Length: 134
Image (cartoon, rainbow, N blue to C red; front, side):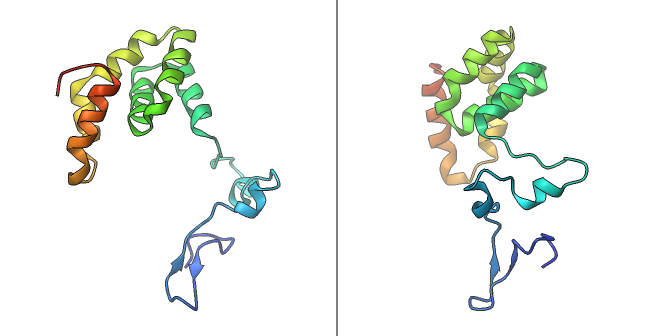
């Protein structure tokens, strides 16, 4: 396989299947970036956690950025209070709330989920956002 120049993705000879990238877990354990991140000449590959990504998107504050933050929250509802706090801090709380409540955008997100998860996702989102619209 030519997907990873560091052979992190390869055909396992015992199993005969592709082994998945483990994001250089051995490097992360000793506070080093994955090999691809460390040597990328254009610094196009970054490693950030969800909280950092929320912070960067919220700080940017454009409508598309807020839609991205809303999708992050819909995927991981435990981040709602952090997203609201950051949006308030950067003066984009109203944009975030309108994106979170945007029925069309929420429906597009849910439509992208596997069929068996859609109804449950809509119910969870409605409960999360304290809304009765569906």
